[in-house]
Image 1 (cartoon, one colour):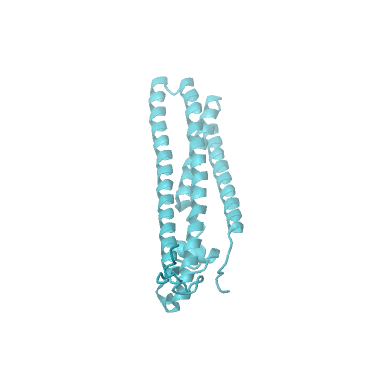
Image 2: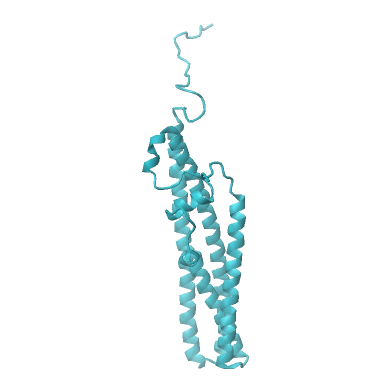
Length: 231
């Protein structure tokens, strides 16, 4: 029988097994921080790709409509071709806005995670707080400060400066064009077609705005706040 080696050293923890006092806590926090940064970068890449696909499809459709319009003298053939092509472009725009909204929610979750990690950094070294320009609170106010580098809410025009807002406006213009061309095909004249096209544009944009407000409110309710901002 072999005797057990009494000289073998059994590994033990160099510090407490859990908590921020653990010797591995900082390394784990840094790894998670970089993972969240990588996830945000992938989200930005996908958002730009989806927006580029929509713009490319819209540009190609406009060129195709111009060629068909010249060939058919903007007659019934042009109207029929437009009402087949433009709804497809509009649906592509709707799916793009929906996916960009999901990307924004995912980005908000990654920002919340980084704010929590930043809070842990300050628990480890409280003296670092004056050097952080982003927030270490994971509520809506803290996430806004980390996203826009401002403690207050962005302006009312901010949604239209973002990629989903721009795509929604352009896609609503496509909706207006669909309604206007359909009215033109029904013989309502230029004035009636422009009026109905404007109504289609406003209606589509209103639906996008209401959908975005509802989605944002739902996402805010789903956020779990662990480190709220001081009142």
